Image 1 (cartoon, rainbow, N blue to C red):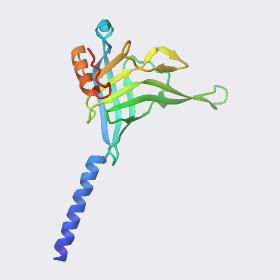
Image 2: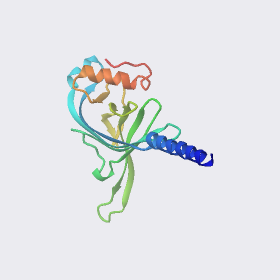
Image 3: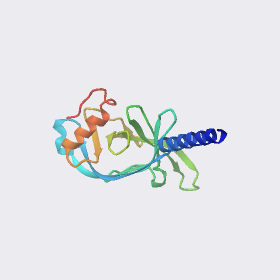
Image 4: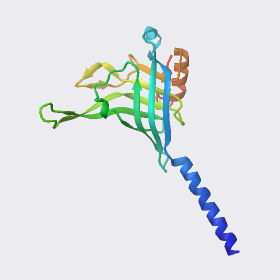
Length: 189
């Protein structure tokens, strides 16, 4: 009887450990897909273009259910004022599946290599589905850059990148599914 009890306890403990590892072990993210970058609203249709998007990193999930992405996001044709060696991101994902894409970085003096200053470059907001197979990025308005910082996305002149997608209609459909809670009912057209 003792042996049977010990066996049952060991089996239950082993199953519990396996379940915890499956749920909370970081998920490897590797998206290399084509997407669409387009302007918000029907009057900005001419601004759409195909872009390649590469997202690499890990998606962590805490015991409380909070998610965090650590890795890199590279978008074809996007020039960032952030040094290449400082482009690793840590994005806290909200309950709506959204997180801010901020690049903190340092600048260094040319004469002696000492730290010249610290900066943060806001790129936009990332919205993902539960398993991170689809993503939408609301790109900040970088035409209004002040001191190497972009400004927030807005529904008047905002740019959106949706991946994977091959047409504006598909991208808008994916974005409306992903970002419904984040946009609080605003639907892209």
